[in-house]
View 1 (cartoon, rainbow, N blue to C red):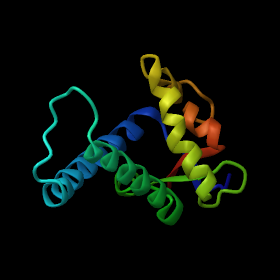
View 2: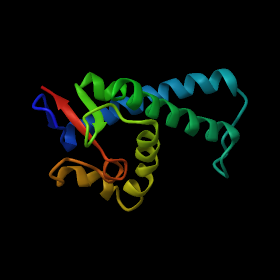
View 3: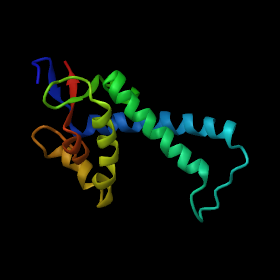
View 4: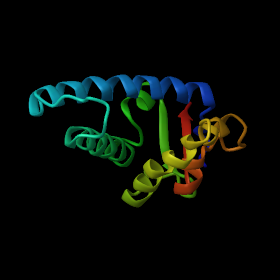
Amino acid sequence: MSYKYEYAGFWIRVGAAIIDSIIVAVALILIMMIIAPNVSNNFSGWTWADWLGQILSAIFYIFCWIKFAGTPGKRLLRLKVLDEQTGNNVTVGQGIIRYIGYIPATLVLFIGLIWVAFDPKKQGWHDKMAKTVVVKEL
């Protein structure tokens, strides 16, 4: 990794995730109000709008990682998601694997995300699966 970077720790990544969650939630609420105004969720199962929201979220996150080396929350906090070996922006494949990697990382008490706090490269399980690192610009 280049001398211009240091690995981003747990708490700054939590802050970025909170910012991103707010942005995504507001955007999805607005989108759903426009394209699915009459869909109600009775909590008995997923509707097509729920699936669409998940797909749009995945596209947003993966696109941001590939194109901008980070989501708005990460970029506001001067963080980047990069390929572990080259330091370049992630590939489409890495973005997809990283996104899917959140599933096992969160399944058991979020241990795969908490892992960031103890890992030498500050990688969560999703980072390890995709061979990515989150770095802080100095």
